[in-house]
Image 1 (cartoon, rainbow, N blue to C red):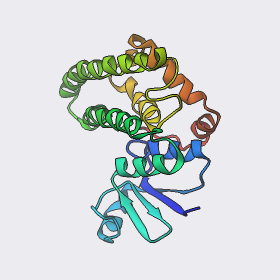
Image 2 (image 1 turned 45 degrees about the horizontal axis):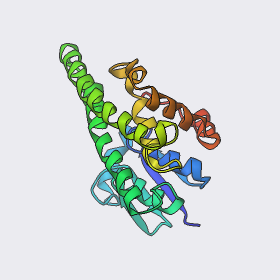
Image 3 (image 1 turned 90 degrees about the vertical axis):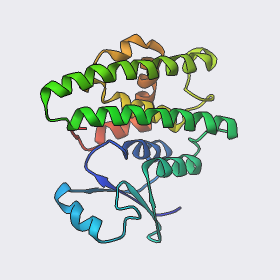
Image 4 (image 1 turned 30 degrees about the horizontal axis):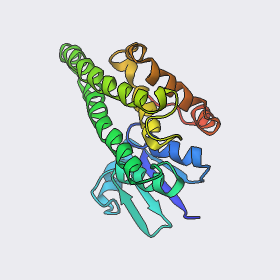
Length: 207
């Protein structure tokens, strides 16, 4: 089995979906968390392909950059990418739409002006509702919505949903109440034994 080092800041953000893949697959890896003050020196080292994290070191020989490339690689390696090309395309579709959720939440977190933050939140809730409405329909279209977003087993799209919805209290803590099928799926994901174990032991971080 390959030796993995997943390198990122001590936050969930762009690395948590990959950490959940590792957890559910039962794959050992080194969860390297770089302190913010250490990052300038790390970045200057030249070992990060695009000068960004997260990165996944594989057998100490190759460093894979970009969070979605890392997640897609791990999902394909360990059976969370979809069972055929169409399922994989559907999973990728869901993963890609969650980028809008991630960017919106990031804008809220890093906005220092409280007046602007209120406005950004209000605008973002409209965007988030649009995305979640579409995802609720997608989930319901897949065997009535009582399983997973794509296919008949959990994929990294379901992990991504869980990770992004952890940030809902930052803009609308009750947003999932409007999407009962998605809310139930988030609970199902958190109840997977390997995921539940990870959620218990993972470092507690602000975001």
